[in-house]
Image: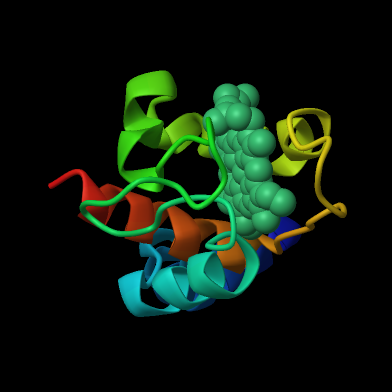
Length: 106
Ligand code: HEC
């Protein structure tokens, strides 16, 4: 019982921080895309991808619900990226990236 109370207090303390992180930050997401992805993927609202046949990020939502990108980014990225070194995004980076991708399809 005591433990339950301690746990919910901990959650209450961290919830606002977690919610902020879970929303992601478009500006940081764009910076991630620019640094790690833009040599192949188009990251703007218009324009073709630098690498032929590579999906522009503004079209990603047509392939995946953006919420499901976690899985694609966490696991599928390596499989679907034969031409590039393994990219590992941290969980906050994934939230930022998703916020950025969402902002593109608005
Ligand atoms: C060296 C080139 C290159 C870089 C850098 C690159 N990609 Fe890709 N990406 C590809 C290619 C090639 C494909 C496969 C063709 C396609 O599905 O458009 C792909 C496909 C994808 C897909 C779709 C996978 C699927 O299952 O349909 C996602 C999501 C993706 N990339 C995300 C990223 C993210 C996020 C970054 C940066 C962190 C990134 N890529 C960086 C070349 C690259």
